[in-house]
Amino acid sequence: MPQKSITDLVIVRNFLEVIGGKETIDLIKICERKRKAFTDEEISKKMEKKVTEVRAILNKLHFRGIATYQKSRNQKTGWYNYTWEINKPRIANLIIEKQKEYLNKLDEKKNLEEDYNFFDCKDCNERLPFEIAAEYNFICPSCGGKMNTISDPQTQKEIQKKINKIENELVILTEIKE
Image 1 (cartoon, rainbow, N blue to C red):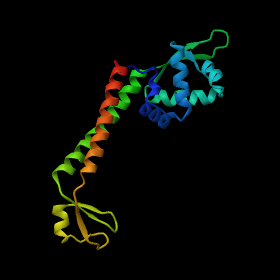
Image 2 (tube, helix red, strand yellow):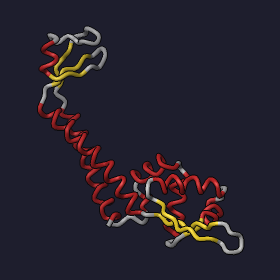
Image 3 (cartoon, rainbow, N blue to C red):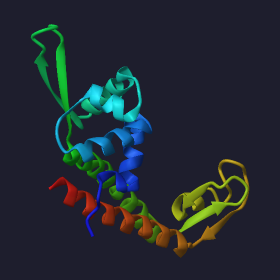
Image 4 (cartoon, rainbow, N blue to C red):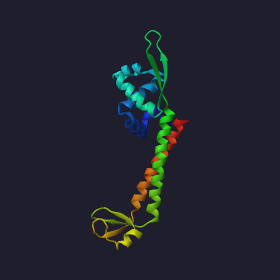
């Protein structure tokens, strides 16, 4: 079932909050409902925020390529009017890039967990692969505590769950992007 709004995805909401704050999500939702170009004054009325606050959010989004504008001059006042639009595929692209990097790191971590035997120190939570722990005679180099072998299939399962979740999100974001 397709998403009603791009902001229905938790990952998108988190990403937008990092970029422009909690109000960014409200701004995006309003713009999605409008389905056409809008002015910052229109959005400020709907959000019940100052125009300067809305412009600050729009400028943060513009910096990332999420919001684009057309500039026109008012013949009576000589002031410029800005008409804004939200580029939803750009939001999806930015998140996809970020998630693919994270996915690669998780894959590396998963492979490392599968390929090596690790030893943990109970005192300071230092974790070392077998080869390095053996060099220190299974004594923790940080605190001097005894290092014990750990074979934790649960860690591998948790990493795999994260990988599956990210892959599912990437499928949804790819649909939005297209």
